[in-house]
Length: 72
Image (cartoon, rainbow, N blue to C red; front, side):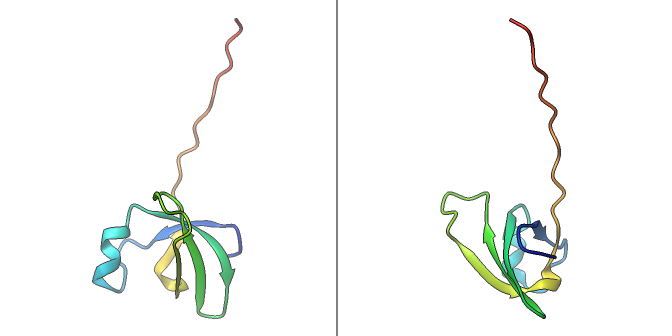
C-alpha cells in the first residue's frame, strides 16, 4: 500500500460498523507502520478521512471501461 492507491475494505472487516462501508472506495493519503490515512471517494462529502489499521484494506477491484471513439 502506498500513497495514491485506490483501496476498499476487506470482505470481513474486523469491526461491525465498517460492514456498512463495504461498497466504498478510498484513496490512500498517508501510510504508516500499521495504520493509514484514507479518504473516502464515492460519497457526497469527499473530505471524509479515516485513520485506520492497514489490514482492513485491499486493492480496489475497479472495472476498466473502454471508450470507443466514433467518427462523425
